Length: 551
Ligand code: VG1
Ligand code: CO
Image 1 (cartoon, rainbow, N blue to C red):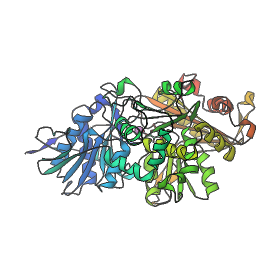
Image 2 (image 1 turned 30 degrees about the horizontal axis):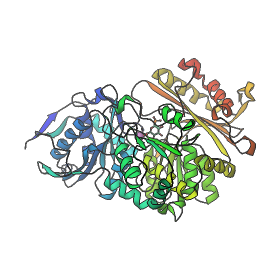
Image 3 (image 1 turned 45 degrees about the vertical axis):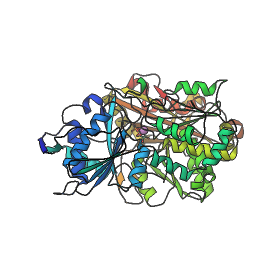
Image 4 (image 1 turned 60 degrees about the vertical axis):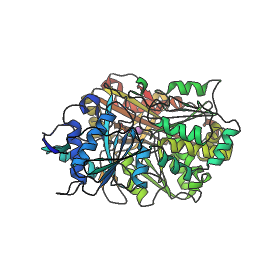
């Protein structure tokens, strides 16, 4: 088969964000857009002169619109760049955590994951692509920056004049000199889960009548959840809903939070609620946890899992430490302090956990954005979090709400909410951030939200991070305002959106008065919310009087 070298010119805007390159699907489908980016990745990870010679890659995506087409393009380009072998999930399907598991189990030279995660899918939605390193995690910033620089100077890409590869059947074929191995996307992942959790105990829990609803949101987790929860663990058929991955995710917004998964939340707050409910996102790395009548915030979930992980066989020997992204509440730190284990605070994005996990400094990691995971892979892992919760419930045999309330009594409660202002004017959002940044030094000592009791700023900074393992640095990771009243507000602009800007305001306040542990977060945080709004003049600058999403 003939390798063709296609001339191209750099395309602007191929700069990866919080998690890979995300664009509107139509942008990704433009001539040469995907090809340029893929060639830039191959140029960075290949050897000068030798291309991808001798290399094996893992490849798959969340099944959204353009997934299959993109996979065929990438296969041809990998062959033309001299790769030895590509492992592809059947029908091009691979959840993000499963991709990480396969990269690690099969020791491939990294992998390409096609997903825009929780962003809506379809021709009018979003698409994304990210490169994960051989350790299994998202490429660190040194590599993503090199890829971006390469996209700015690219002049040609290599591809193959060849027909499409049949991805529907498990087995091996050849594409020119390259082996294409189509594998079952669920098997390696399911085996890994079986090795970490007490499947017999969870089976017994279901056999005793415990009920569950898992919403796969028509995205990639459906086949995994059905195989593991229903087939292996005996949850009644139908426990997994919206289980068939659809190219447009059924027109929904596969972001498991109380706004986009509101039917599931309504079910759990109503009289027909099962014992436990969970949802995942587009690419299967996020999780939302609900009990009967209770929503567990991701920050609290990380803390509860840290406190109880040793109930699962995979973590019975204890944890080395826990890491959380900066905007995540400090609930997990309190558990780490009590257990006497490490606690780290990193910038937003799973790529910052990789070195800590590789160095054996932490076992669990989490983000307030519904991401939780451990050292079993190098991505956050939605179904893993659900299984750890189920394992804990199987051992403690208490309702989710009781476990949570007990946790608050033991550690105090970090009331928490995130307010997102989505699709706002980019220039206005950037100006809000720039002006606030310029005023940080003046804020300490000032008092805000006076008619709600008042909060005094004790410190304010622009979060910067130095990786304790490799010494790399990241600056400008979010504006933090600390208040004397044990409260905090953080401002960040999203790095995963594709249109306009999204302002995220993270709000929290600690409470350990036993009589005040069960309030409504929006009410308990009213003063922090008001102070953040006043300080940054959110309403005036963005022209919005309320956020689009409150998690
Ligand atoms: C968001 C979340 C962040 C997460 C990232 C990728 O980023 O806040 O915690 O790591 O999405 O998750 P941002 O920059 O939009 O705030 V996923 O499930 O979209 O891969
Ligand atoms: Co995701």
